[in-house]
Image 1 (cartoon, one colour):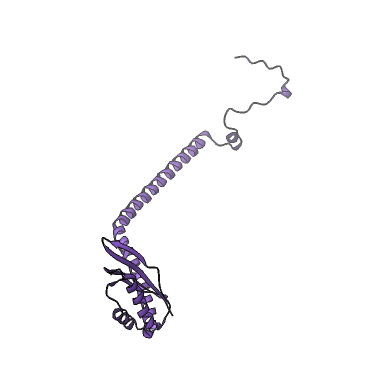
Image 2 (cartoon, rainbow, N blue to C red):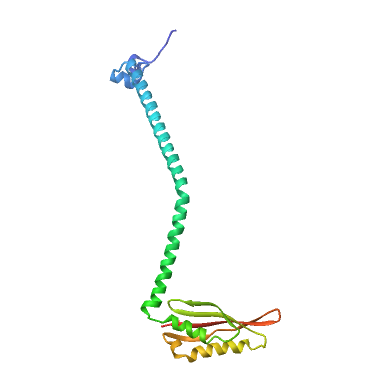
Length: 196
């Protein structure tokens, strides 16, 4: 091949070797560059293999911990239920202790007064002693249509007893709601009071 260059020799660009510019400046032989690139490739492959091994080990540990968690989960659920029940029982016992010990209210006497003054046909569904409240819920049944009178008489009898109202304030008979069961009239009532 013939090459014709009409540019004067002093203005011509000098030819560089066809090899790597950096390699020509540093005078590194091609074999060393190939060996360096090969070594770098082997190092990268080794790093990838080590990382894959670490991922596999972590995955195996995760799977093992998950199976252990699945084995423990029923016991944990049962334990949580027992702990929550224990907390609620402690709360209830604390409220009972507050009512019985600190306030020194004789609830046995109050229950006796309720029993003694309960008219015929009046039935109690629930008696609640709370830290700040005392509640009686019940129903009055009568064939002679005097169930409302029985409820008012019951509340008045309890109000008249001084021993019953001791440590209680704002004793009041709530709304009385009448209903019918077949031919029998029933009056549902609520009596509320605050504990001092």
